[in-house]
Amino acid sequence: MNQAFVLFGLIVIVTLIITYWAARRTRTTSDFYAAGRSLSGWQNGVAIAGDYMSAASFLGICGMIALSGYDGFLYSVGFLVAYLTVLLVIAEPLRNSGKYTMADVVSFRLSPAPVRSMAALSTLVISTFYMIAQMVGAGGLIHLLIGLNYTTAILVVGVLMVLYVVFGGMLGTTWVQIIKAVLLMAGTIVVSILVLTKFHFSVGGMFQAVIDRYGDTFLQPGLRFKNPIDQISLGLALVLGTAGLPHILIRFYTVPTAKQARASVVWATVIIGAFYILTTFLGFGAAALVGKEEILKYDKGGNMAAPLLAKHLGGDFLMAFIAAVAFATILAVVAGLTIAASSAFAHDFYAHVIRRGQATEQEQVKVARWTALGVGLASILLGILARNWNVAYMVALAFAVAASANVPVLVLSLFWRRFNTTGAVLGMAVGLVSSLVLVFVSPAVMNAKTAWFPLQNPGILSIPLGFLAAWLGTYLQREEREAIRRFDELFVRSQTGIGAE
Image (tube, one colour):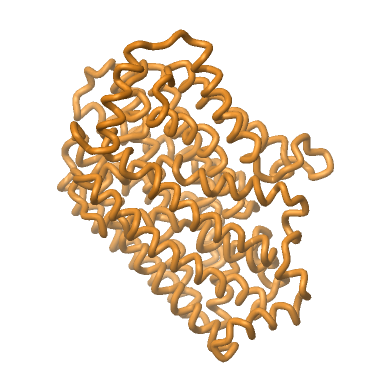
């Protein structure tokens, strides 16, 4: 317990020092939203990796693999492959076309008020959904390690994340994420090597130990997803969802050029790829060495598999270190989510809808900080209510919402000349509502026998609905001549960078 207190305390102190340093350099909206566009490609790439490798990755996926074997490993594959979509389709056009948020791109040639309002709502919902998973992971982790009450642990994380964003802005958040990414990779590599030493560095030996303990079915599909369509739905949500996650998209505005945006994604993909390969050893290692029964005893969602594996391999100190790394992971991700949500509300809704472009920079930053406080309070409350959910599972649902509401509109805005305001608003609205409704009537929330929607992830239905609504809405409205005229300007700008800020 003393070791845990010391390590947790060191992380909090270091991150607060970074926040203080960043606060002295955060004066304008560009500083607050985009770190003054001062980050290099490698810095932003490591920060993206730090933002992306969340509690779902480190705690949830390891637990999912330890409890569900092959089906749990599908989460690792999906999270990794998702970055190819971002690299090939989104990163460069987004950096060239926008200023601070996704709505800048969508509203470039469409009516700004309805589009920005809907985009801000979508960002707030997705960010809050995603953040619940981080809060649940934090509560369980701190409760396991130092015995702090779950609710109190959630409050501690909530207060810290608000401090990072309110005072440090994007610059402080970025450096917290960079430090977290380095710590997470170091901890993951150490535990993976220790796992392999138990099996004489034989991956086959590790899998054989799993088979000996749980049988051949553990390495075959079907333990979690009884219906193959569920696997397809999950894959669609993960692969497309990353391209619609607000806290990932805003990171491309922190670099000075599109070239650096591409470099960011390459750096992030390399780091994230290495990490998700290593989750194989953490998840299956926990299954073989710790066991399902022990994992479930501490947490019904399986979220404590990685810390318990660390304890089995290296005693209390390694467990404390890994838990502290996971704590840093959660702090970095919730800070990124909070700044994405607050930026969307302040920049898209307040500045461009309520104030119709007349808000001063000081007003925007002030509203963004108050929004961060509101998002923090909402996340604390929802985190307390969702205590027993697996965090990887919750994040996968957030991916489905992002893929359904944001991706159709973003892609069609960039590549379809005929696309118009009605299509954008209807596409986001239907994608958002359908994905949320399907989640609430699925086995994720309702009893499996009484659930109206049979699949655990709604992506296979809600994503096509989002695209269909965007297409149908476009043809329900007469052609917008201005939108069509400005398409050429947007397309050239997105592909070449000419005219980009």
